[in-house]
Length: 452
Image 1 (cartoon, rainbow, N blue to C red):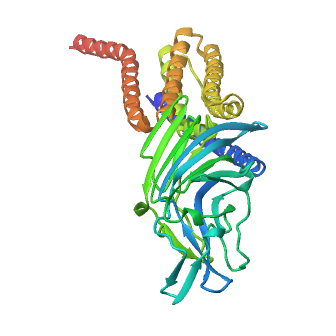
Image 2 (image 1 turned 180 degrees about the horizontal axis):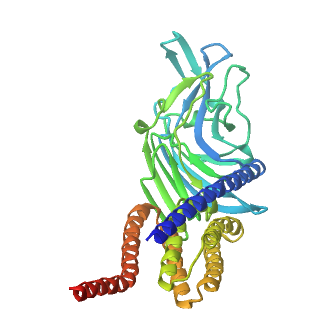
């Protein structure tokens, strides 16, 4: 019995040692992931960064009545707004690392409500008469990174077509600044809006936008609808609210957000501003690099302790069934092979993807362990049973990695089954020792009867 206890203690010690070594591999995963993120940043600088699109907005100069100097600007946000973006994402390769970039075809339709607009008014706060210069208004929009624009933004106001490809017009006033602030690039174009007063103005905006990583839109309409289509099969939705509807298939995704002004941080649809910078709530999508080998490898490492323990226990039961001695060095080398699996998985995943890397690593390591055990115990059936069990453990872990939502439930019942199997084989070991014990007991009883 002491022999078995020593062996169990040895298995526990080897499991702890190998588990600690597998934790060191995590630091390598973090290092490689940092290099991947640095590559993404480098590509973003040359291609275009994450994009946030805000607009269109009408900006009209306002001055004190009778004076030429600009006093402030009147901003008009859309009454209704419908955004439709078709996003084609792809991975650019820089060495062995991938960077996710995209091209987005953006179409925005909606209306501006100019029915109640006037050419002059009286500002109660300043006690001054204001003149609104509708003839020299401008249409403005904002994007996070201007490198994403390869041409001007086309917009139609009723029957008037213009292209937004200019910097913000301050009308000669140094104090006048765009509401988008310095964190965004403001694109604009002057537009004569005087003939559109007392009307509902329909607009249609089209542009092609390059970016990387993320794409966001600001739902600035009184009621807004944002629809995004894409070929990414692993999108992550983010922003002020999740999509009202979403569908993800093997061919791509479709997501729709519906937002009204009361549900977002917003000023009035029409307001005056001189130099106030605004922040906008947005909705959008993050386009992840497919496969996510570093995330998957990290998750696999969380199960390393369990895999090593179950594998060494399987070897222990195999040792007990054949009666061959497997010494501490043998257990240590088998544990080292199990740890090498994760390093091999990480290195291969960078080249062939996580799924194929997992299969290749499992086959190579199990083949090595099978040959090594066969040279020790010389029993092919036992070796086959051990490696089959280890292979099933690998398959079970792979399934857990691909069903993140149900991983805890499936993992718990999987461990329940494994524990039952271990209990069964432990009884088989006890049965093999029982006949000898029974024989000794019968012989002692016979000797006692003879003495009588």
